[in-house]
Length: 455
Image (cartoon, rainbow, N blue to C red; front, side, top):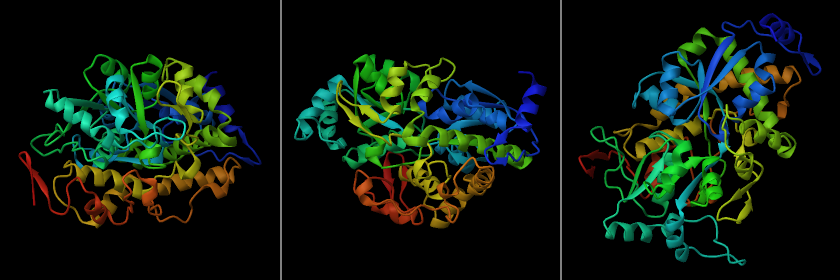
């Protein structure tokens, strides 16, 4: 299709009962980055289903080598936007690691991650795990079952190494959360020591997602936290066992976001709305009619230019089930959620949770008032852009008005204790009270000095 033909096609697109409202775009040729993970799906679907084109956007999608390369690409303008770890825009905006004001008008999904251990570690854990009536391991599995295994390894002089994908990744915080909930110290960061291993019983370090299974198989790490399909890949390869999904860790927890620089959205407000419209449509398509489109989504994602894993491996978690031990397949219909439960709305309370975990483990070195968490969340998460895009889609007959939280103040209702593995509820409006309620982690005015927690 020529560019002129494409423009004419986009400008004459009929959007159900109403004509699509074509925005005057400041920029229509765009390059977006992503990492080869199942949860990049909204980008692939928006491209393959023509939703970007419907908005007059000519998009190129480019896989990136790792999360740092991706972030740097957005900051320096090589990429106009990207599938990002939710912690990346927040960390960059507060100057942790790279400093740049990154924002998000769109949350890409809920859930979607797991924690996997090697076969040897799993066998050592199993005697510590209760079984259900059918003799299968009882879920959710607490990290308390891992604690004596780590102690045994340490007694033998073997450091217990685990992988996560990036220091400000959901996976780092979820792995730390799970370990701490089971009484295992996952370690702290300080301004002088950014390894995150100060006082750690389990030593966490960075491994890029697609390399996780091979690194586990090589024995360099004994377990990891990662998004799909790299937990199910370990099962398919027969080298590891996923012990818990993040849905079991924290029901309907926030995951990736779509990130752009603040300068981009200021210079390209209409383009930003158009991008958000296309992504919302993709999310709707992924979840509509009880996941009826998931098999097609799996075929798209399996292509080498996207995730490039075997369709069977992607489908193992993408179509409503999850395989733990080989043959232990269980129903987890919301493991990958792209639109249900307001998955795409960028809630301030999601941002605040990430910030609390940065503070909990020392990435934010000093205590901050509750108001600071609220201000940072509002500087990064942009629900007003999201709702403007959603309103246009409703007007065009492409979305249902009832599916959006129009009256939200940006904060979800508190997550009940029953939905979180340690039985501690979360309220984004009171971050310091939440931090104080967690048994392991920095509280109040505590800081990490050298190898000690002071205060």
